Structure formats: structure tokens, C-alpha cells
Length: 192
Image 1 (cartoon, rainbow, N blue to C red):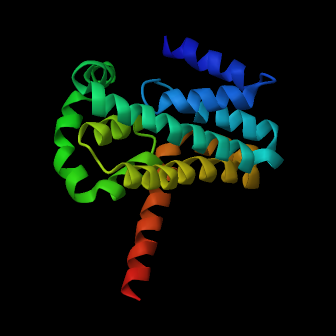
Image 2: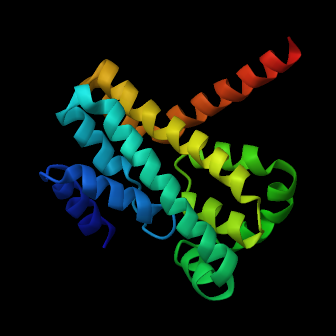
């Protein structure tokens, strides 16, 4: 099933309305869709490298707006829809362990997890279920998703096809290193 969804998304990446398909996929991936929008983002940027920033910003905005749907699912429908979604991705046990982390590290948790390829739906649904502050959630989501999609698109624009294979096979490593560097930068600035 995932292979057919992947193929369908690749087909939509070449569609004349690809930017709208990317927005739709980015939106639904934030709450329940299993395949990340990178599957469309990468070929779209490769096909139109001068539009990398626009493409990545559309992806970011749609993902953040979709995160509100995930938040609403967690806030209003956790026992029914929220648990069903988390169960489909085998994330129910992780959900229970996140309450103390959200309480203590909320914004940082969302930024770090939202920038990596872990299921963003876990972050959005969990934030809603634990009544995390919506303004902080919005801020952290914009930062996290912007870092993730703008970084990938910017690398593709700057380095072209050679970086595509690297990004596709090592997306988790690339985004994790970027987040580590960002956090280290915050600590250095704080110490100065």
C-alpha cells in the first residue's frame, strides 16, 4: 500500500498543479497521512530549482496549518480518532511517555521533533491532547517545519542532483545534524 501511495505522490509531483498537491499532502501528513511531503518536495525542487524557496514555503505553511488539524484531533477527539491514528502508526506507547517531556520542554520538543523525519502527527496530536499552549505550538511548528523543508529545498537548489541521493537516503541524519547545530548555536549565544 505504501508503495502505491509513494508512486501516486511522485506522479502528482510532475502534475501541472503540483504546488497544490504538495500543499494538500503537507497538510494531511501533519495529522494522519503516512508519507512525508519530501517525496513531492524533492522532485519539484529538482525540476524547478529557481523556485526552491516558494516551493518550500508552501510546503511549510500547509504543514503548519495541517498541524492545527492534528492539534484539534488530539484536543477534542483523542480517545477516538487520535488513538486510532497513533495506533495505525504504532505510536500509542510513545504518546503516553511524552506528557512529562511536553510539560518541561514543550517548544523545544516540537522544534526538534518537527524538524526531523519522525512522524509529525505524533507531535501535533500529542500537543493537542496535553493542551499545550496554542501560540507556542504555532511558533514552534513554524520554526520546525520551516527548518526542515527550507533546508532540504535549499540543499537541492545549491548542490543539485548529487545532493538528492544523499538527502533521500540520509534525511534523518541531515535534519538531526542541523537541529543539533541550531541548539548549540542557541547555547553559545546564551553564554555570550
